[in-house]
Length: 191
Image (cartoon, rainbow, N blue to C red):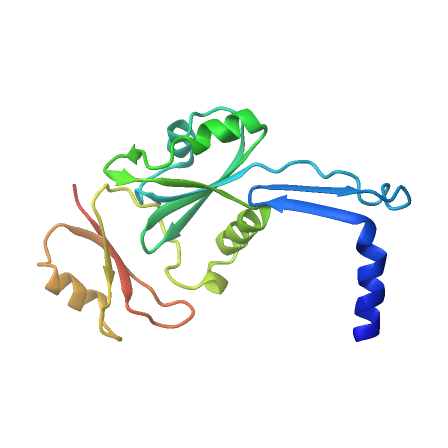
């Protein structure tokens, strides 16, 4: 193993790799490997967190300036909705990053660089929510009034939670059950 690592390190001595979150680029000094390690296209990915649960992809795009967006992948976490966006160009990408800390509704949204791997993970979790864990997506949330309940006793039922919250004005309760019961629920209330 040690010998092969030394040979591998010597082989790669003429290769420079530079990468930063959100952008990846590979260059080489060795003309023999230049054909296989051509400069890769720059990637422009942004992650937004802390958005309202009711956020739609067109609202996210509008919040971030609406220009140069290739695709939007919405995500849902315990702390709110989120999104990962891919941009076509650096100018639109940088303009979107300038929205960090601004408000969307009554929520302060964090906007940060991310990688194509995070986009792939978000798409994978959306296609197969049972592997992602946490809450399984059901019908879209239609209300602006959503309560995230954490720290619930294990085994809490929907009826117990509705009773605890007073029982009136509750549209839907969604308990986290995948891959196993946990102490979290989302409660959607009427307007």
